[in-house]
Length: 601
Ligand SMILES: [Zn+2]
View 1 (spheres, rainbow, N blue to C red):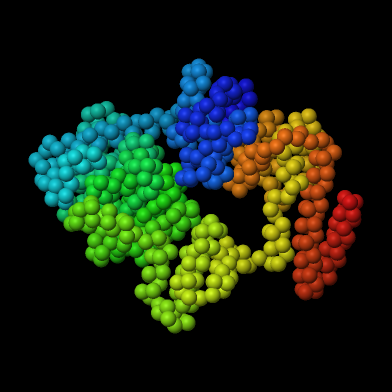
View 2 (cartoon, rainbow, N blue to C red):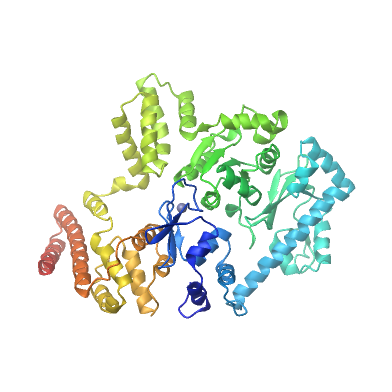
């Protein structure tokens, strides 16, 4: 991101990452680094490190890491130009006037800004309709009837879209909204039954005769609307379509309002609908968010993970067994959340429960929420008879796939122990089954033994690691080493293959080789190892060309051995299939591989 000689690079050099991160995280010196509690995941012992010399940060817990810009982008949830501006400001560097990078980007930014402005006008219009019109009075009575106070109506910015077909459209045009922006906003629809469909005519309001829930993004700007029908109109809920500022898979309702409470209380209450969310909030629990209609997406889960990794799922009891709910729960587990499930008495959803019994009663229910495992066991118990052998096996088959999804090994083992006790089966047996379920889930059961061997050998080898370190630390020999690496592609199939590819790509482009440059394009796993390496304490040894060459040789050997294993299995297959010609060719290759290996040692 920070090109050499660029403004970004200059800002970075003048900004002190320790001081800037220190504005957000309490850092303590520890050896050559600084340590603190990670702001991106919840933890009690520090695993968040800042390297003052390399000017990078890395969390050994959740794996996030990068340079100061990345940190500010994640922390303030802003894009790169904005992060640059913030860091420059704090570092006292004056930026030249920002020119948008390309005309397309400038246009897209303009469109997004215009859409958010339009949404603001629309939100205000809906509020006016609710508060100041006769039609609105009737709707307010209805909302009061549903237990929503004026204060809550105001807090959530609730509004009303009137029944006339184009009241909003007229208002927006009065305010000078261009046709192009109107069409992109999702606030108006084209009337399919009219031939006036082009130009300014033939459009009407998307939301009519509906209670309006403004939907804000995580920084509180309105990006979309949800509309609930009054009476029996269909559909009951109508949302804004996807627009340049709104994607339903990346927004959690009430996240911006609830975030402070989410961080403070360190857990989220996850509900389904707008009204559930508002009712729980009104009941005194601000740390509530809603997925709103969709089953939870991975993006939503990651969004939530920035505030907390503990969640109480409070869905309708009737929907608890539905596939969509299961998907949501599985997603949370896979992302390492601690999940509890709140089961309300039959017939209640969070909205009706709080309305009927009050916030205090809901809190009591919250205390009774079960850890996910217990909840699952209860469900299994309802279906199967634990006293019989068949019942146990059926219950086990039901439970194992869930257990296999828990990403953390230690937690998974704890669950297994617990489950063995509940089902009264031998723990060793359960663990064996669990291992099988876990590998089946990853699709590794199909692996042939020789592939499995290769897989097991794929943990980062010291040679790879050391070579990368030398490349990063010793600029003088870098060019020579890279040439040799490129010539025999010793890194092919290595566990840091992607990283080495990126090292070569940067060198070819004549760009500087830094940890954060590398980290930009490689995958999660390698990125993590790269940062871990960068933070290794001890004297930084630059290494020699000889040492680099011996690392290369070790990698080359590994590559050849891998090829040999593959060849061996191809040979067996050719033998079985009695393919004479192919077999001869393979054997010849085997011989030359052996020769090459011999020359290496
Ligand atoms: Zn972390």
